[in-house]
Length: 409
Image: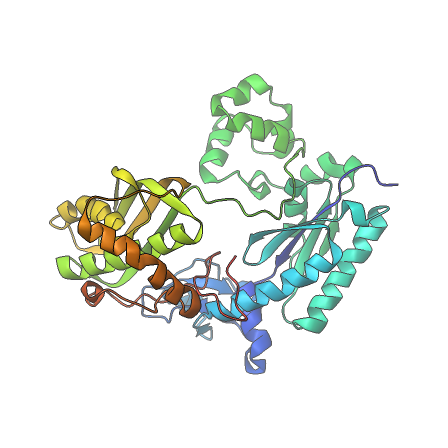
């Protein structure tokens, strides 16, 4: 009988690109990228396996990608298609695991401890899942699977054999497995942490394990994570209960640099309405906000503020954000603008003495009902007509539209 947890991490390979290749046989075997067309302000959201083999990387500018690989075909993303595929593979996972946690649009953790007598059972489940993905979704949508005693090691394992690998790390092999990986392979060790560790003479996981905890204390609470990660320890559970977000934000890179108050005001209002819609979907209100802009020079400016009372109304969020953005218009032309709602708490009834605000608040349930049925662009304020048209994102975790066959995660 198995006495330790058995956790799987399943990660699709080149997800958006492979979905497009599965849908269109003429794209199979070709180097493609999903994202904006070359010549626009766009990036490669996902490159196909064929493109990656020839040097194209995720998040690379489309213009740079076609210089590296002139035959690269850039495909517009289809968020609805990816959302539907995500729902389909999640349904496959739920047949085989007691608990399934969606980690991103193309990743999930599965706790199969109660479904397995031993680790061979887990391998058999992984192979069945791969076969069902092939039969029900298609042979071009492949996934890599890591099997380990916890989420941290399972995720590292799934990344160690791409594409389409199955990697098993048994409990007594965890440290040996980690010693063959790079520090940058550990989720949570980003560039800044990596640089600090290297300055301390730590460039390998084995060296991190040898470092006394007092040395890692300089990282404060993060030191505990580093200490445990080096030993492959992670007690976090696989959970199918979606956590409430700590903040909700939207930003957008404009199709052209501008210092037009009308365009920026309308675009920011549109973004604020999208933020407010997501807050209401989660039953949350915000006590503070932040606004961010990126200038033509690529420099950033951001600032925060607090609301007089918690809110999930788009116009109030906009007013706060605009008060931070409008003073920046004289500095330089702006290429990106964004707004976030922060310090979130559960919604509660409150009566406003402002008649205009009260009217807007009473109208929101009707607008939300329309939006829930037809999508986030189903209504628009007249004052937003000057806004740039926002394209649906293909690389996000959330998807605003909920239809009969589309589900938002």
